[in-house]
Length: 441
Image 1: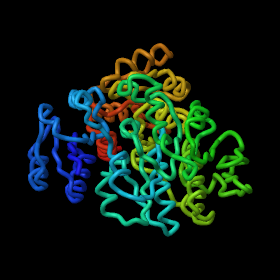
Image 2: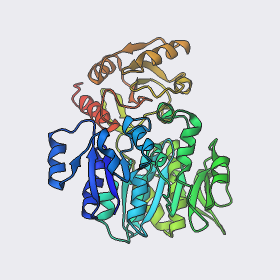
Image 3: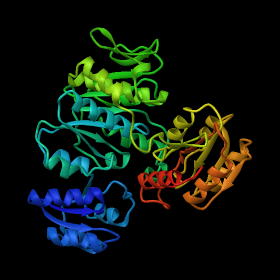
């Protein structure tokens, strides 16, 4: 049996170690920061701790998603011809005949994954959300039965290290600039996203976005059955919006639901709904069940999440806005008087669209993190002047509360990753919510 080295001991790594140990694999582990808690887990599992100098004994390295391909351990593995894979790839290899619905794209992944999972469960099927949504994949699959659908939120980091990954159902919601610092170029990022389609064949289904810039490139790349979605035009096979209603078209065309009955707010969320409707129809979920789910699903934490209203000021947590396009969609949900909290880790992408979306909407900008000076410079280029630079979230919320007036919206939508200030966007959003909920009118 192959020897597997698990590189990175966060959620992905720990989930993998527990699963692979029970599957009988010879294991090792490597991590830049093995603390007391991790050491305890490794001892309980009887897993050896390795260094970059001792990786040559392994056949495969399972890499945690966030670890870059230019990491010294990965470069050494390449020199030694050791295969480097993600948990997506390993799941495909060690579990047979699992039902996979793979969700990827730049924005909307978490909402679409969560909604699709609820849609399946509401229809009487078994389904769980795993992957980039924050749930360790291999352990969940190991503890589930063969009838379970695994709705996997697939990041570009995970898809980068796949070779045989072949979901029965997949979708690419959209592709816009993101993680260019990690992938090296926009085309590399696009290619990573396209890996979700790479091994699909005529027995598989994929759903693509007609309105997306990379639609034709993705469609030409796949051999699977392609269904379309669009918020702007009718499609022959797939879902679309017409006359303020959602329709599904295949051999015939049926209205699924009126937009006014969909509980999710924001026009960008209708795109996510279209993907779920199409996937649900392909899986065989009936229209009544689809409608009931859409009338009850209100969204996910940290994505345009209403926190509270205080003295006429509404506070929203959009910490999931980790890139410019995601934040643009959040900004477009409001008309005016937006006090925006932005900034974080620099992904090396253009900020222009952020300020174009904020024209006539931004009342003030409160900027923090590594990118705060970049945001300030670009803001002044676009003529914005009410700008505050702060050191942390506490200062940001305090400043927002100080300047906000009745009728204003305070929106945390950083258009940047959380790294450098937080471990993840959840931690960032939770601190924002705690600080907001502790404010006094």
